Image 1 (tube, rainbow, N blue to C red):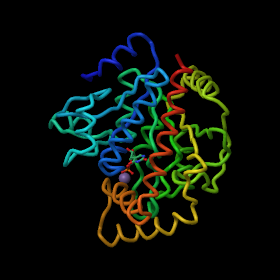
Image 2: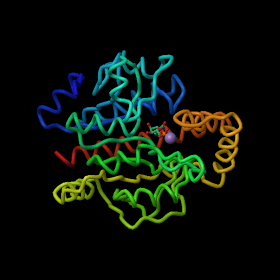
Image 3: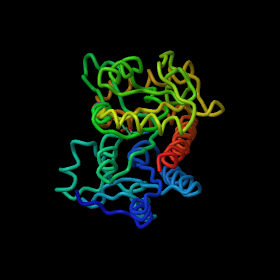
Image 4: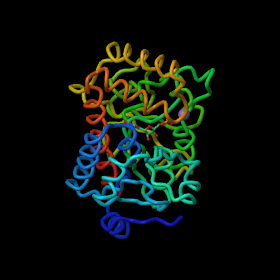
Length: 299
Ligand code: PSU
Ligand code: MN
């Protein structure tokens, strides 16, 4: 795969300095402009402030970019018709010169090819509610089962069926470790009612866990579940009413497939008058912080 590296990511990789992969769908489809751009800039400067090169990944005019310039970041944040590119669409996106943002699954694939082993996102995709009828299960789960790297998330997005997502992760052989918690966090809130069997206390613990996982020749990622900071959470009893209404509205309007997650996040932001967006920014930056610490512990 032909990869365009930004100067600082290229230099960090060749000098074995820490690098953190960041996805771009959270920017293009997960948050509105201009809050998305300010989030992306904060995520990158947070990395730089602790000596980690931020590798935001996207596809620009059919070229794979690992590390974006300010102009490229602006295109992804404000551009019209930015595609949402999942892993199976990477070849098509290159062949058809798409400009698109990468999801968790495609970011993992590209990061691995680039030689990056730590990645921070917001919340992973998973098993949608009603999946027993729609069969809508995010490719993020299969990517997590096949690509060895550390993925830092605030759990699975609350719009999903969280118990089924956790079961599926187990079936797919993905170790799910709580960061200082024994409960799987639910994106907007710290609690989901689903308990975790594995937990870790420090970035160093995660680095050692990843090293032994790779040495044992296990093919999957390690999924780190890092709860949203308590002061920024929206408790699940409160957010749940908005989520079920948004899901009903999506079904009434026939919204499904890759449009579903962006619609739900956007609608919830509207009805919470922006509070869910503040929470999303907070949990994602919290993941970037931890991801940068893990990347530093691994070099
Ligand atoms: N985390 C966020 N906001 C997002 C996403 C993650 O805080 O928008 C994106 C990721 O790119 C993830 C995608 O891969 O949502 C899941 O989409 P789907 O459910 O269609 O697989
Ligand atoms: Mn889907």
